[in-house]
Length: 417
Image (tube, rainbow, N blue to C red; front, side, top):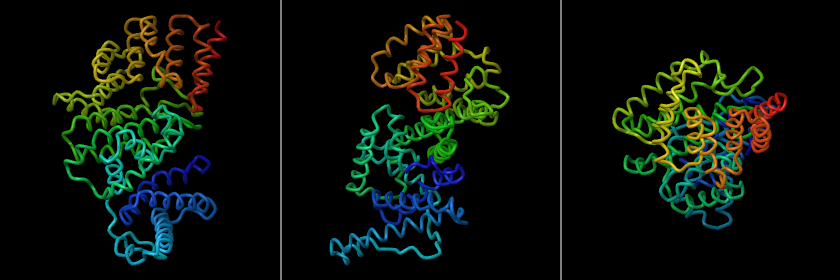
């Protein structure tokens, strides 16, 4: 379901509680698809009743109680339809939610268990990431599709197949052992990275940030880091999140408008988060652990440690991107590498590199290529070419703050000609 129409307090609470409630119901009934359906019904009930009647004293207990009742109704219906009451009763005891809900035996972090379960090796990496974003991150199918740069219908089919795969594979709902955790780790980290990105720069809507998602991604990554404190990729991802999120307070103005990196008030940056992030990535690199997350964190650290935008060590950033390009074929890495090249060797050099992305099917639907090209053309002084590209980029994004910023840039260039 979408929470967008709810008041912010209820919306944030439901987003925070949804994966916790799903984890609690999953642990009780072991049926992913049916549990998610029950939780969705509970969320719909809360979205209808809480704005009218007020948020209950124990909102998680309220949601779990409603979801358990829905599951009980579902099981009773299945028992009656199949006429196998005894067999089902032996296989899965029906627990009717009490009138006053208590939480016996709750796992201390059902959300983390759910995260690893969704990244089971019964699923392809793409399906695991999509399912976890849906179940743990609380993203809508449309938001996940944007993160993957695929049509929404394609993503809906992928998520549906993933649910069916989980159901037929009999994936147990418990924390996997150390060997299984290591095997699933790559998918888990990719999921957390995408959840964080959606929270830090929301793909659609009125606000630039969704702090519930970025905060949850950081919390879960910390939990994974506690499980694997010596893993360089985990440390690198946590560092990247902290170093990036440290700038959040300076990224928007009083009206929610986007403020680009080079114009931000750096006194608003979170110095504690920067210090923690730098410590994490420095320790990971010192151990000889050089992966994509560590390199991205190192790049973020160079930005964060510059007192002013014009003191940014762009040659160092370019050198880090040169290494990263050898590890990744991501078009976003190519795009950001072109920006670094432009900052060191001039905008024409950056524009030349952007040509390699013109035939990329993923980038053709993203606003970022047009926006970067417009920015570099503006730096060359070609305002007539930059302005329409800013407008084209604005037409491709569904984020209101990003669209407003791009249209403002286009308008300023048109006035300046």
